[in-house]
Length: 335
Length: 147
Image (cartoon, rainbow over all chains, first blue to last red; front, side, top):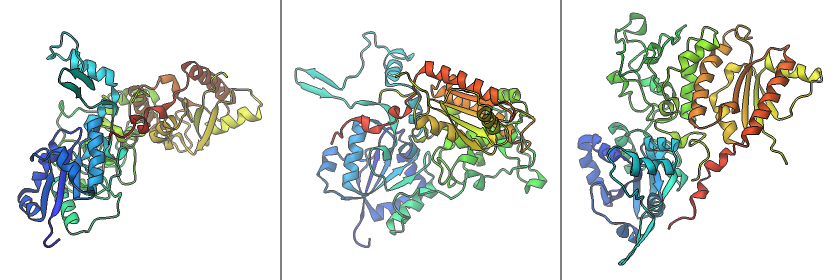
């Protein structure tokens, strides 16, 4: 890599833009990136056109970091284009890896989404109830818009992905780890999950479990109650695990690698690093772990009452990966 | 051909599976629609088993364990009592009708209860029709590649 710079592409699908911005979390190392790489596509910050990309030879882009999920046909088309034009395609961030928060839209249908977005939101003024169309003819010719798919998909659902990098967004440290691995050619086998640890967030957490005999009698909402942060002598002078205190924390079902940033701000983990190693369905693992801690006292009614205190279990346990779950979406519905 | 529901049963070894066995040796006639997998304890039932069953084509899932207080492993079914209600809420959010998933406490002597539950559940699921979950997740249905 001495005299040849890496061709770097970054693209966004159904994305909030946070992953693009998060690359700046590598701080001054951005200067190192500019030293070793030429940007050949990055809609967030540079004005390359799709035509430019179509004219690149196949495999021209050394590394393409793709963030965002697949929501419509344009995103899918560009995913396929970038797969052709890239040597290495990385699903960067929770959305491309698992569907991300956009994939919570899989609890709705295309029809109900359109109705909400174009008719019923409080700020919509659309008296003629006009919906976008995929084709519309005007005197000057035909206008086209991408087709909105019935579900949100992961990048790997439409193209082969070389590496998966979870996080919402991936942390600066992990982003630099992966960039460094790419630059020095020290990448793991294709298909690996990168920018992660091997354990769960519990491994990196500043709180400590009491474990023996602890059961949850009542679930607490973090916006309504404060956690008890008192250091406890028997727990290496750390405060007690938030889940044991009754706050819903999915860290025990979430891959490590983030250094438990949220826990270090006294907030329970929400699962953005996706499922633990070798696990496919994160939400059911979280439900199983948390369910087994409920203080049922051998009474099914008590179990039901306490479990009912978890508001929106699908949204809570699959917050970052509904498209990656076993069921993928709510009821079979037209794609 | 009338619709024959495919129901997956996950029964614990010590109570409910033995109860199902008793239904057999007592020659109790009941609907053949349940296929039973034996686990050592209902506390072993990972929500993933249930979700996978639906995803792979099951029309219903029946989990059966020892009565509260009777678990062979003392507290195994306490875990079941905590997990299954969460799973039920999740299945509801996924749009799966509540009659398609059932948790029952069945003892080793309750062969007749096995028959009763299976018969009842089979009819309820028959009325709901097939679930056909795979049709929702087939990305090939996205159509041909735009490229």
